[in-house]
Image (cartoon, rainbow, N blue to C red; front, side, top):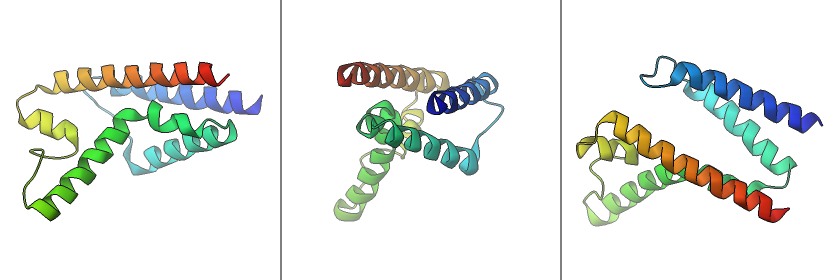
Length: 125
């Protein structure tokens, strides 16, 4: 179908980008690319009626966004920070994790969330 071709084109574009963006990153997407990609993924999720799986599949991004929200709210109401810096990956860098370790851990978390999303998709039928 048309949606499958669209999804395959998006996946192919992401794999091509990933090839040039593996460690150390040489190409950065920027706002225009990331917003277009997010809009495309959101549209696919809505059109395939799987929008509830999207926050699960994008769990790493949800955690990164929540770390910023938690940091801002905690600083506003308590006057101190929870993390050394937010988003969360900067906190791990500041506590001494090498960049490769941060990337590896976030890749593993992303893979775990993707597998959970795939399992959820299978369970939804």
